[in-house]
Length: 118
Image 1 (tube, rainbow, N blue to C red):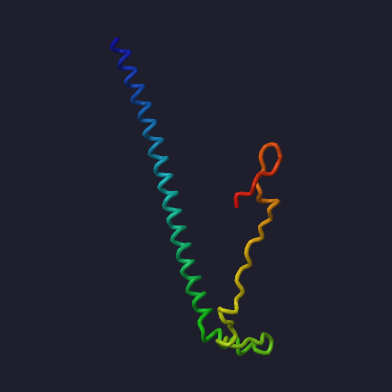
Image 2: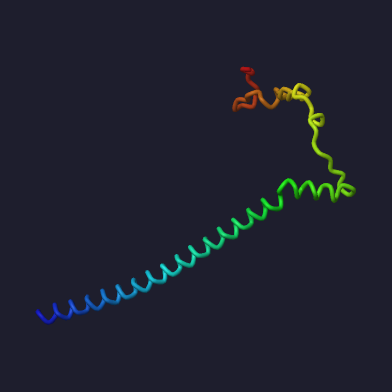
């Protein structure tokens, strides 16, 4: 009985060692993947920050004013004036919804129309 226990113990020890070996390399592979992803995220954040800075540089008011002046003949852009906007009281109110009784009247299961509760 003792040799069987020794053999089973040795086999279980070999199996656990093999499992630990595989888990170790799987963990290292996952850690490398995580490191690569973190580096990629950092690179993308740097690129986004650079694009935001470039966007702010290209949209600065003095540059846009110069572009408008340079392309005035082709575009005909003029500065906005308060007189170009309308008054709020000139905006028409939305018309009331059209209520079609043929569409809104309830119908019972026999197909006859019942009284309209509204």
